[in-house]
Image (tube, rainbow, N blue to C red; front, side):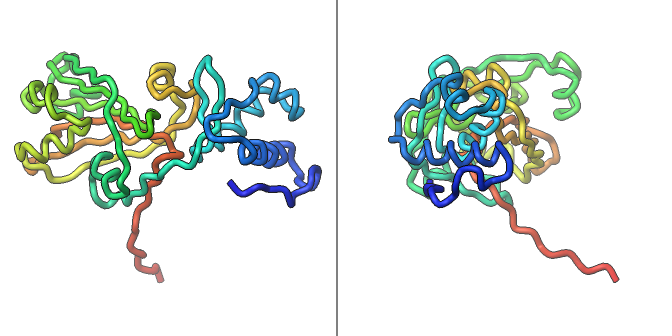
Length: 251
């Protein structure tokens, strides 16, 4: 990050803006992998509360410049490649990473059978309690967890043996490779959410840190949902955009 040495202390009106400037300078003057001082010590040094410090640090974590690990500390991160993608075309993380020659890998894979709740029943048009398969895993790059993915599918839509060998983490790629059922579109809702305790633990971040969440229903050509997924992304690693056509002017 470019150092903000040309901004004098006291020249910025708010305490929060001054804090961000001082944090930016601290981070830029630290080496990748270096651990910052503890939050209480840093808050005292900068003259702010720990709550205000955490809020400011979330900005830099969202940019991928620092990494906070629960119970371990806050570390400065070197320059990380950004996975930049438009939203007009549905592609897996693996496909996007290959485009920028970025190696990604899958962490521990958890495959479990669950029973449909009210939400699942509505999405898949099935009865409450119907059996479903849930696939959960963490995606890594540079030995750092960057995404947590959960896919829920009908039992007859997923061959569990397909996940035992050669599965790299993408259910989408698996279905496309298999060729059945034929896929048509994905309806996706995008939210900014605070990391729950479980998600924070999986991504090695602080509970409450902001994540990008994609909730997607993947439709077959027959109009049924074959995959209902929750994808949690670290915003400092992923950047999404969309190209929109200009609407007609109302006269």
